[in-house]
Length: 183
Image (cartoon, rainbow, N blue to C red; front, side, top):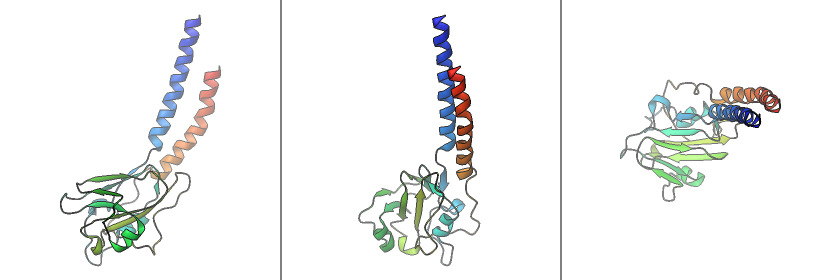
């Protein structure tokens, strides 16, 4: 009898762990391809800026920016605000020279990226990262980031709405699982 009780408790614990794993999987960050199909390249004169691309998205902690570029032609370099404004790559926070390069947005705040080769030609991006429960997006239109592309796609499906649905499911399912464990 004692063995059956332990087995039942283990089964219930396993169900709770699986529930948390499902919620975690759904609520992890999204991967955004910088510039969508245009990629991370030098914008043509008069093209939309990378800030236009960023303004179409809401970035939260855990999201990943993927910079698609040809190695040796471009770089994806994270810098501070002053270096972003002046296109100075002397003191990078992170410098990726091989594409595609991926950066995880692991804290809230502003992130600044430049191509060390073409920053002065507008190949730069600034995004603002918020916590998952406080939606806002990239820097204001008066900021100085840059990205091209005429037909930019909408945000990845499920970016914020999936997180909200996962949280709602979690709130609904937790009492059910707790009741199952206690019974």
